Length: 327
Image (cartoon, rainbow, N blue to C red; front, top):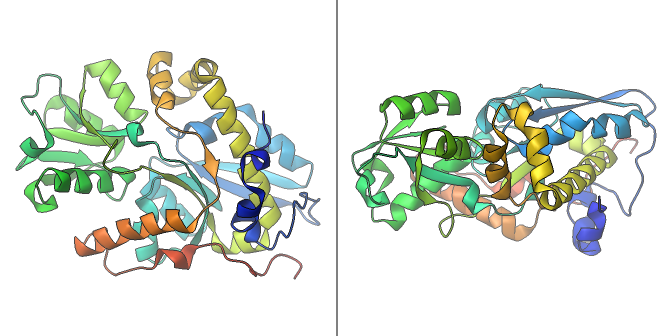
C-alpha cells in the first residue's frame, strides 16, 4: 500500500488536516494513558468496513495505547446524532448529513473527504415502471433517507428538469424500509446510494432513472468530534493516513476487495463489485473549494426550509492554531 502522504501535495496537506498544530510529519507517539478512538461506521461504507474487518487500525494504534471501538449506524444522519451526543469521535457520511447536523448544533469538524463519486447514487425506478425521465416524477411518491446525501441529488435533479421539490411527494424512509416500499410498489421511485442501489439493480431489476453524474458531485466526508480533534491531532492524522492506504488498495484490487466485503455487507460479490467500482476511494484533505460546495448545499436546504437556520459551513473547518493535547 502507498503512503497517503505521498499522494498529497505536502504543503496543502499541512494546511488542512495537519493544521491541527502538527507542524510537520510528527509520528504518533505513545499516549501517557490509554485512549479510546470510537469510530462510527455504516456497513455500506466500504473503506471503513474493510479496514475494520482487517483489524489494521487496532494493530497500528495498539502500539501507542490507543484502543479502537467500532459503533455501527444504519445511515449518515443517525451517525451524526451519535457524534452530536458524544458516543463517537469519528465517522464517515455523505455530503448532506453534516449540513443538517450543523444546523442542529452538532459540534464537529470536517477532517477530510472522499473525492467525488457521482455514479454511486441514483434515482431508481421499478423495472416495469412507465416513468421515462425525472420530469415524470411530478406528483409521484419518492422514497429517500431524510438528510442523507441523496436528498441534495433529488433537489438538484428535479430543478434540472424543471420541477420544484414541492412537485413530488417525498417519503422519508431508511434504506431497508425504503427497499421494502420500493419492491411492493408503495413508492414510485427511490433515491439511494451504493451498495443499496447496486443491490436493487442486480436483485430486483431496478432501473437507474438518473444518477448524480452531471448533477452533483456526491462527495463524502470524514468528520471528527471537535474536542477529540483538538486534543488528538496525531491520532486523527494517523487514522486518515490508514484510510488513504486502504482506499488506494481497493482501487487496485477491486475484485479482491469485493470478495472480502461480500460477507461483511451481506451482499453477493457481483453486487459489491459494482458498488465499489462507482466510488473513488480517494481520501483527500479538506479545501476551501470543497467547503464552498458544502455551503451551496446548506444554502439550498435553507431556502427550501429543510434546515431551520442559515449556517456557515466554515465554522466547522479545522483551522491552524487549535489547542492540542499538552498545550
